[in-house]
Structure formats: structure tokens, C-alpha cells
Length: 310
Image (tube, rainbow, N blue to C red):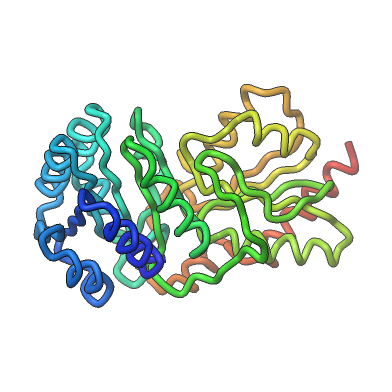
């Protein structure tokens, strides 16, 4: 995701001299193409993220289009007050790019995990929150968000993400993307767990169940009307996210369902409301938190049996 983001931004910067790139002293081996082509528009703000966000706000007030880039906890939580007061309150055209969604930086420990960012940034008025699942969604959302003028958070993973679309999707900010239709239920995902969702749907087919697979790449705003239309006849819905069960995708969908007349089963699969006492790589932590297709399939089959008995 980092690579396709930088490549797309370079293409945009070749056409738009107002694009600036700010980083908190990281990204080397990834950012060189931008730095070499536009050295006057690259600013290393150092390990001073609060100041970096203020610089970005100042650039935006001067008519520039700044992209602020760092590991997620440092570009969101460390400078939250500046994001809130300097960027969102002023409704400035600042794009915040966070690297390392969920437990991407698993071996670096809880300080580097990003399991609260979606909840925190969803709460800010004027903020658009994007969480792409693969390189295709990443490129399309970077291009579409460039055309907007409001504060935007783009949550990316790191590298090695698989391309999950086998068709040319029409990615629109706010609109859920349907990767597969199905009549027996719906799996709604965000970010890289779309891959797990795809595997779950495929495994359910072997049990004779046909589930719809939906990617919510935009956590805010979500087109409620379209989402409800896609899931209104589904008696069982699971959401899947590499984020706390508090305030992320599951909470966003629950808020929408609570205001509708939906009467089916709904379950959030995410990271429990706790700090992990274990440190490990992403694969290890995904297993710890149950982001394993076989385990999720078993949960869904259990709920399907409950529905049959009603």
C-alpha cells in the first residue's frame, strides 16, 4: 500500500505544484521518488508531530495541499489536539496518511499498534476516514480524495497486500463496494481483513451457504441508504476489522442498523477492548484475535443453527 500510495501521489504532484509532502522523520527507502522529483515540496519535520500538523495547517491556509505521513499512532494520537483544532475545526484541506493499520507493526509492541485510530478520527467533525483493503482501493481512494477539499485520514498497511478485486471496481468515497452477492447473509469488512472475509465466504460455499461480501473502505461518511439496501434482507451479518470492537467498522454499522428496522443477527469481530500483553508478528496476533477463516466460519455456522431454531 505504501508503494502504490507514493507512486500515485508522485503522479498527482507532477500535475499539481501545490502538493506538499510532510513526514515525521521516516519513510526512507519508500519516499525517495517524491524527494528526488520535488525536493522543494518535501519537508522532514522531524520527530515533532504536533508541530508537523501545525505546519500542514499553515500550508493549507496558504493554498497548498499537504499530505502528512507517519506511522499511525504518531500521526493521529500524538498530535490529536492539532488535528482537531488546527485541521478539522478549520476544515482545512490536509490529508493525513497513517501507515501500519491494526497490528501491522506487531513486533514493535502496543505503542505501535493502531487499534483505536478509526474510532478517534470518526469522532471528529469534517473528517473523512478511509481504510482501503488492497492496492486497487488504495490508488482509487487517493485519487478520489485528492479531488476533495476537506480533512481526510487515509489508513494504510505497510507492504505485501494482495490485490483482491478480480474486476474493475467503481470505487466511490462513502459507497460500499460489493465484491460478491449472496442470499444467506453478509460479511462486511474494512481494510486488509477483506482478504479474510473473502476466504470466509469461499469456505462457507463448501457448506452450502452463499454470503454477500462487502468492503467498507470509507468509515466516514458511509452512504447509509445504499448500505441498508444491500443488507436489508440478510438475517445474519458479521463485521470484520483489524481494530478495537469499540468505535470502528462494527460500531459504525451498528449505529446504522439501530436506526433502521433490521431484526436479524449482528456480530462484530475485532480486537477486544484491552491492551495486548503479548507481542508478536502480524500472523501471530491475527491468530490470537481470531482473524482466521476457519474460526470465523465456525462462528457463523453456529449462528446459522440458532436462526434455524427460531
